[in-house]
Image (cartoon, rainbow, N blue to C red):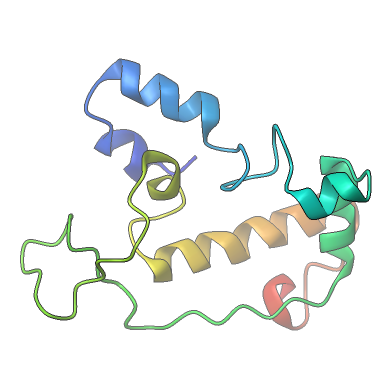
Length: 124
């Protein structure tokens, strides 16, 4: 998990709670999976394998860096809809950082599952 989110946790107990749940669905694929996966009797490992085999394109906005709860100069461009739960913040403090972390995690996943890890989309 990103260190920034752990640093943002107000107490050691809060940090422990975040660590225990950061990879649960909807922020990861541990625990109860979404209906489309359970309906098809897919495991987390199968979801990872299927995802790693796909061509994925991730678009990340270079200026999508606002987070009104963390930015001192929050203004009319602040993102009031950004998920700011502890689990979401472990993925990054704004959409750009979350997108960049996601792309890096896909690269690592592909490297661990034998995907090419290079080329286009999130793997490249």
